[in-house]
Length: 243
Image (cartoon, rainbow, N blue to C red; front, top):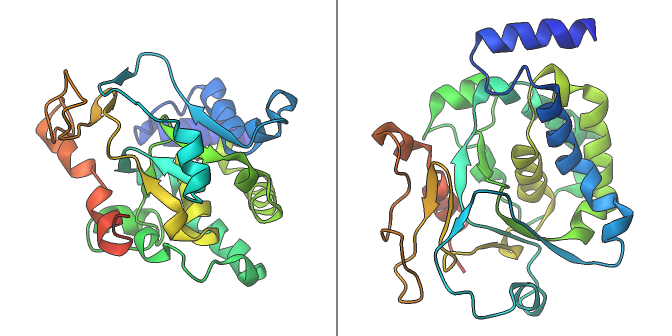
């Protein structure tokens, strides 16, 4: 707890958001590695994370879980962002320690280049010690629980949990999920739900689709203009493309 207190003080001075909220650290750890193990989900293969105060703008006239199953997809995202590098400064080095001991866990068709791009936001790349900080914004995610239950992911989460960064830094479930998917899963099994209009303040995914209303097509944020540079989807399209 002494180390935790010192870490909170240090990173709060660096304006790392929510660093002083113990409950936020606990939430990030829970969503990273524990929710998929909950007995209430034991019967299920797929989940859709839906948070309070979010907005959906399009009619969804198909079964997203059936679609994921029929198309052999592991994970579906909506918004893709750069993270605060101060919150994940040692996450990538710890991940590389794990990878060195588990090289067989790396998927041959991975998205590692997306995770290691240093050109788009070099300041993030430097501060995060080799990690682009790109991540799927996990307040919207549709996924196959069996990936989070797999031995490779359980081993990875346990390694991170022992390292302590969920508390000594502010490792979020979004970068943890994204790194695991980007390294250990076939990138072709990760799907952008471009047809689902969505907002979690202050960011949007606004499709050009007649089934959508109340959202300006192509809008990414209704906040300050500088927030537009937080969009990491162009990097995803550069390295992975779209199905």
